Image (cartoon, rainbow, N blue to C red; front, side, top):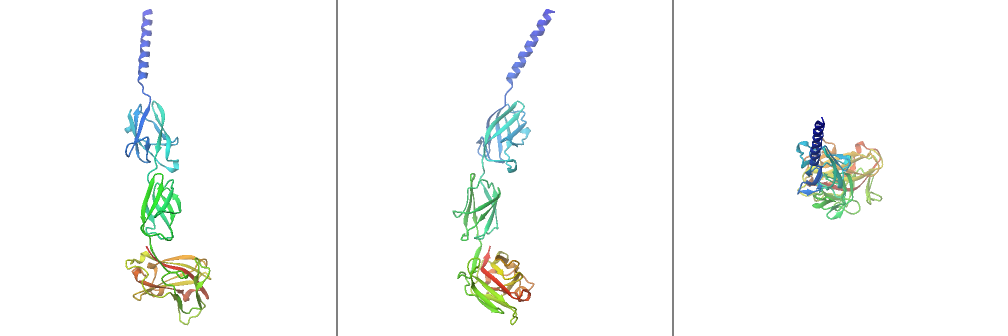
Length: 367
C-alpha cells in the first residue's frame, strides 16, 4: 500500500513538471515591426493601405483597435504565429485622424499596444466646376484628401477658400486671373496642382468710359435715355424709359456695330453668354436684348424683372430666338464669333406703362 502511494506521488510530480515545461514553451504575443506599402514604411502607414505585422505569438488574432475607438477588420486566413496583414481604415465619422496613435492587438495569448503613425496622403484635384473658370467668380474644386489645408494659390497669389468637405472646396477667383495659371492646394501631405483655363470675357460697356462700345444712343419710342445715371453697381449706369408711345412700335439703345466681340475660334453658341446687371422701376418691366451679327442676322431674348434690386442676368446665346426674340428658331446654330452689336430696350407689348429699365456692365463671355 505504501509503495502504491509512493508511485502515485511520483506520477503527480512528473505530470506537474511536464505541465510546467509546456507552459514555459508558451510564447507571449509580441510585435517587432509594422511594415506598410509603399516603400516598406516602418511603423507608419497611409490610409487604405495594407500593413504587415511581424512578430511572434500572433496566432489566434481576435481583434485590432486603432486609436482606442476604431475596430479594424482582417482576414484570419492571412494570420500566422509570426505575421498577419490588415488595411488601415479612414472614416471621418468614426473619428479617424492623422498622426501617431495607439493600435491594440488582441490574441489568444493576450493583448499588446503599439504606436503607429497615420500619414496624410498627397491631395489630388479631379474636377473643377465650371470646367472653364470665369475671373471674379467662384470655382468649385473636387478631389481627395483636402484635410488641414494651409493655402490655396493661383499663379503664386493667395486665394480665399471655403472647405465644403474633404473632397470639395470653393475658391474665390480674382477678376484679373489669366488663363493657363496654376492652381495649388497645399496640405501637410503635399500639394495638388492644376492648370486653370479661364473664359474669354469682353466688356462691352460699364458706362464709366470702359469697354469696346462706349458711345450709346437710343432709338424708337424712348421717352428718356441717360447713360450716366449715378449710383449703379460699379458707378454710372444707363436708364431707358418708355412711357407708352407706340409711334414706332419699338424702342431700344445701342453702342453701335463694328468688329466682332469674340475671336474666330469662339463658334459654339452653347459656350457663349451675355452678362448684364439689371434693375427696373417696377416688377414686370420687360427687357428686350438683341444681338446683331456682321452678316446682318439678328436674334432676341426677352425677360421680365422679378426683383427691382440690382441683379446680374446671365443669358446663354443658345437661348436667343429669331424675329427679335418672338420667333421659334433658336440661336443654337448662331456663330458667336460673328456677333458685333448688342442692343438693349423694352418689349412694349407686355410691360407696365411707364417702364424704366436700368442696366450696367454688359459683357459677352465665352467658355
